[in-house]
Image 1 (tube, rainbow, N blue to C red):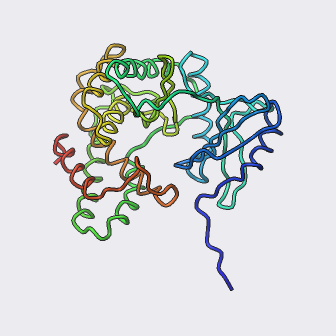
Image 2: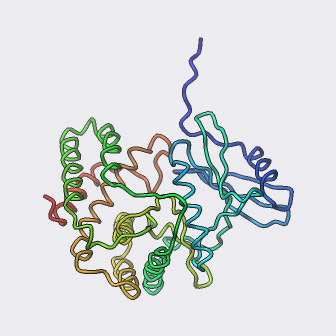
Image 3: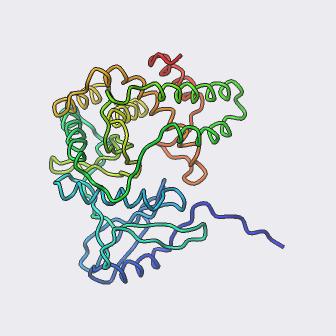
Length: 326
């Protein structure tokens, strides 16, 4: 007798997805669907009967809670209504911004979004537009002050690190020194998070994974993509996420410097934030590594998600030193 192995990340049949969208959204028929890419979630191109493109994101089963999806889709709708360029969710016939479907591995959710044209800004970033992008992020932070979602979504880095370090240790079972280091690093980071003076560090709703490759550019306009990690947290985390990602893919330092100047042109970082830039940079790096380890068996290795264990071991120690953590 052959055992049936469990499914971690299935591929939804594109014809079936077309039928569901055709039955539940007021779009010109026929509906064409094709898989664009797989990653933390799956994205499909949806073309309606008038040859207008839309995007459909299908979340992985168990990756995000229903409340997380409610929060994100409401946030994108809010930003769109406030003239911020984002891929906004399109309401279904019953006025819902998302829908649930059953898959072999469990319940999955999907949403239909507006299509975004342009090129990925990370493919050819420049100093002048990086300044504008920094100003755009600060504007998003300011606009989201008045965002009143129907559900809450708090980013708790302490819980995330405690949960995901298990997978990072599993990935490093053959590297004894790194096992000791990462256990110690997470403990140090959690203790430091407990010590932060919360009142003096501005917080609000953030993007959660802001970087050059989550931004499209066309006609002198930015469209910010992929708010999948959004939630309420320290605003400085978005800035450090951008700077760290630039260093990770070896972007010229001038891009990050210009971005930071652009951000400060709209919202000046206070003294406490400036003093913690290295800390949140180190936090971004460690949380990225733990998150990759937790999800690698669902998404695999990609150019932007590559576990160069030697590099991360060296860099995390160096950045903990810069932050005064060790």
